[in-house]
Length: 292
Image 1 (tube, rainbow, N blue to C red):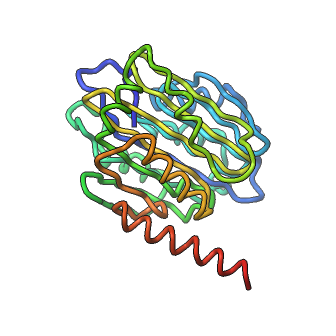
Image 2: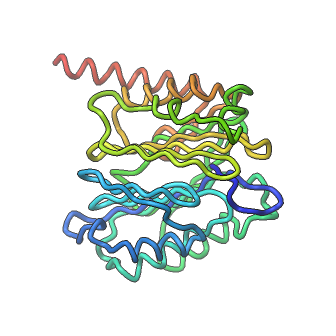
């Protein structure tokens, strides 16, 4: 994922995501102060640029991607040289261990591993000092994703689209300083009512992010068009098959990628046609159930 604001010899677009969920009896995560969230994000190596609140989800634009916070769930999505286990350690200062119901840390394969500040194995060792979980790996085409999970998330960003080799015209649209692809990004949406919040941010020298929120549903889009990255991604917590199909088809039309891998349930990476078949089957089951 994604932006060129980190000045190393080669920007690594590999995504990392930390997600936590709390028990229903726990105090709301949204009640934590802005100063706490600043420390959480800064611990990873990023910074909060701005925040906008919806009725059920607070969306943060970060220097290294996105943060979404609801009463019971947090999803911190980053890229580049970030250290998400450190963010979790900060959270432990403000959340009782008994209030946690689930945790998931996932990490794409590093494109430039010699420049990474840590490996997945090192991140895993740090998290395993305080929680016990299971490790899974998934792959599809060129994409590889390693995951450490404690419990099973209910509100997680289980559906993610990883795209690489963007269409040349589309890539230039996002790469040229004079280009303004905001209207193209705004065409990504979930079916139904209008969103409560839409945040679009352009990074220098290139890169864009979008946060979209409506009620409990949210999704993030990140684009890193520079030649050493040439990727885009979409991640959503929506469970609706129709919403997932809509996001997938819109993303394919907007970015025209050469290679696509879809994380279908937070664990399995599927090729495009396999994901389409599974999503269409799920959508049909939903329609059939509504007729009963």
